Amino acid sequence: MPFNSIDFALFMPVVFIIYWTLGKNVKIQNLFLLAASCFFYAWWNWQYLSLILIFTIVNYSAGILLMKYEKRKTRKTILTVCCLICLSILGIFKYYDFFLTSFIDAFSLLGMKLQANTLNLILPVGISFYTFRTLSYTIDVYRGKFTPSKDVISFFLFVSFFPLALAGPIERATNLLPQFYRKRTFDNKQVEEGMKLILWGLFMKIVVADRVCLYVDRVYGNATHESGYSLLLATFLYSVQIYCDFAGYSNMSIGIGKTLGFNFLKNFNRPFFAISVSDFWRRWHISLSSWLRDYIYFSLGGSRCSKLRNYRNIFVTFLVSGIWHGANWTFIIWGAFHGLFMVIERIFGLQKLDSKGFVKVFRILITFLIVNLLRVFFRMPSISEALYALCKIFTDFGNTNLYLADNTIMLSIVLGVLMILGKEIFDEFLPNRMKLFDNPKVYVRWTAYIVIFVFIMLMGVFDGGQFIYFRF
Image 1 (cartoon, rainbow, N blue to C red):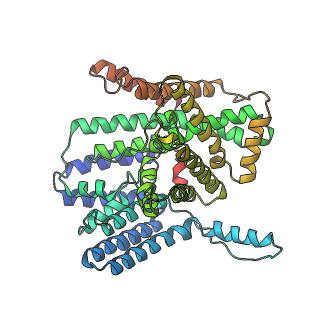
Image 2: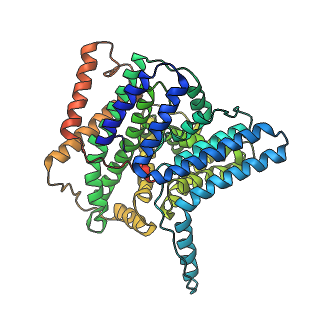
Image 3: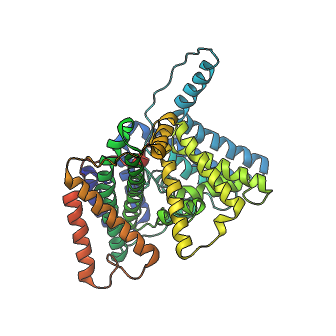
């Protein structure tokens, strides 16, 4: 049940009305939200609710056991078993077929033919997100940063909460679980803030991302017959697409949470104005990059070690990022290159170097170019196809093809991208100069709401298209 579907448009108002009608009884509210969350996930596949239940039982039990035992060796065993169970489930569903076929292919290169049956399992939507969400809870309990939950309903809701169930943000127990324990009262201002985020998120998704997708898919799907310029334009637009798709989802997720009295972590902070790859990852998918920093990078030793080990830690962390994103060598290469560029920045101290004026603009453009070109690996289904596309970008200087027959589509793409770009520029460089949704004047605010709503109605793609990060 994607947020941009008719089904959700019917589901959410019903949940909202019943939820706030239940009054201030937290337990009843939580029970209702748990039932709504189970219904929401079951709408996609009710059988995979069992996985969410397993993750709940395993991590809840691990938390209780970690509280019970003080001996370090015992606690480490409990954490290890919990991690192995959760990561094994994730590995079977997401990576088993990939590693099996890679293993067979490797032996075939040596002239040895092996045969094995792949599982061909359907990837449970959101499994990567709730795996990391639950593991962060257990690891924090193990580290003594969080008191384990004794409330089964609240913990089950923490794992399955429907605004976060499909594609994050990857919430931490330290932020979200205490909110399930507290009384939540209806707040007009918070609901209004939530509605603004939902409206803007819908605009990003169905007006910009889904329109841009029409051109990107056309070019990438016909890469052998496209010029390098067409592929470069499609690559730039793919970055716009994936940003508007995922940031749009995150805005809607955070907005839905606000309408129900919850505050989620911010997930994006204008990443295309980053002045380095390191800065990009402080702005892009913040909940994932901070998770990797806290539970992978710091666990490996972070920067409190020799320079060589620190470079290794950075590289390994981003290899994990690539693997997390998908079961394909293209994602691993994508993650490895991000890690490599971050190591280079660390060697020369670029991640700490502040810039102003022309130098800052230059660094923004270079970072944007690097991140965009690496997205070719993210978009293409194989390494060979990605390398072919990159080769054409640098060698084939034919005409740029803007052949979408419907001029209205191109107009909506241009208008949508310009509106996104304009808002990002003002938010980044002139945050107090152009306030529309937050303008103190009522008529300005409502004019902005109506204009965005009209754009959504006239130019939105209402096919309930899946969000890109549902695959991860």
